[in-house]
Length: 127
Image (cartoon, rainbow, N blue to C red):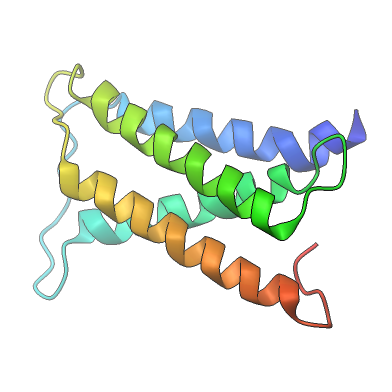
């Protein structure tokens, strides 16, 4: 039970938060000159989500290696991002945006790459 509460529940809860935010109608973000704030928010949101999912996958019922955890986390986050964008197409005032999906997947790829590098270090910064 402790393993579930510490490693899996945060990823599940964060997924629920993403869906909750996706359910909001008519969200207006301020325009920023240099970057699209929407893409920055997506990147940060999915970077954190990827870390939580990766952390969860490394603590399944048995020891999971770096390769398997990376593949699982990247696959799960990619599927979730696709489903989230599809879901948004049904919310009044929202629309599905392929560039949001690509931003989400890019964030997942960056985080998985960084986590793989950190896991290979002797200090083992990421548990």
